[in-house]
Length: 216
Image (tube, rainbow, N blue to C red; front, top):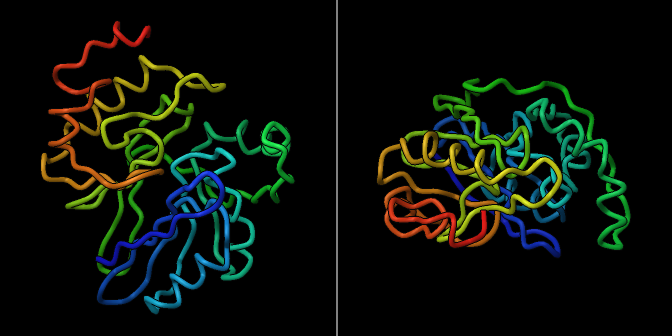
């Protein structure tokens, strides 16, 4: 498979392109900002995008969705638990002194376990709430796109509306950490890591973590 990303916007968010290496059909995951740079990535790989799918709907992950979907004439899908975040984009933008992004129209609400065909390949939606109520990760053999659920030696924030540390910890330990150890974790911000590395070393949710030391 083709897996590439571009770092977008002031939040340095990772937008991912995942495509079949044979058919060059693909999906875009979390187009957060700078639609023109995302389009350049797609063009460079000669990929035909089939849809946009999102791990969650915070402003830094959906700012370019409407423009990307309009440019390619493709649908947008996200979990129904993200509806409140989508409806609150204007107020979230105001908190950061930013202009409100265009609210994207949802074509499909993603179900947990749903599989997206990408040419001869596929991505499965894994429920990973905690950072947001409808958080998802997308898994294919060898890698997972984890959004803001799991970072290198860290995790996503749980102090925002809809966030919950206990739910996040369960999503990671009973969901992501059950994937094969060599699975590469592509994160919503920052560098990639692996399931094995985070199980061994993540101070928040790793095998030797003590959440009480962080006040959770």
